Image 1: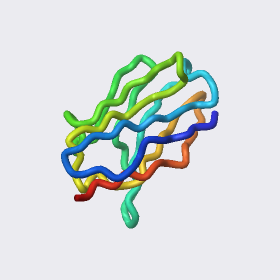
Image 2: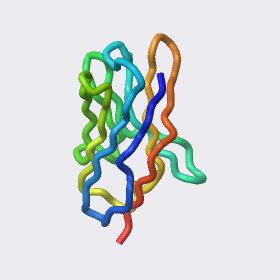
Image 3: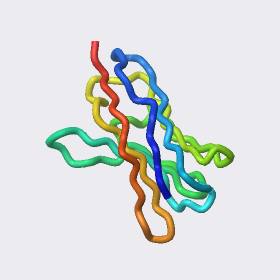
Length: 114
């Protein structure tokens, strides 16, 4: 499975972005899909995840502001990010866990700055 993340960019604090992760094949059977954030000097952290049954979980820092969703017909999942803060800045990587194997996209840079 190849993953391609897109949608990052520069946004002012309080703004919104929607990230997309397009998979090379069907996402219907993916056990877990989601998004991590990587900031230089910090560990990669989970931002949001969704199971095959559509249960979701979020980092405390983004709960209530971010929402993960999926479109099986487009083999794509999304991260809607609202009320963005400077501390949300980082490279966002999408990932998938399928049949015991992890797959990672290359990431898309989100910069929140005035």
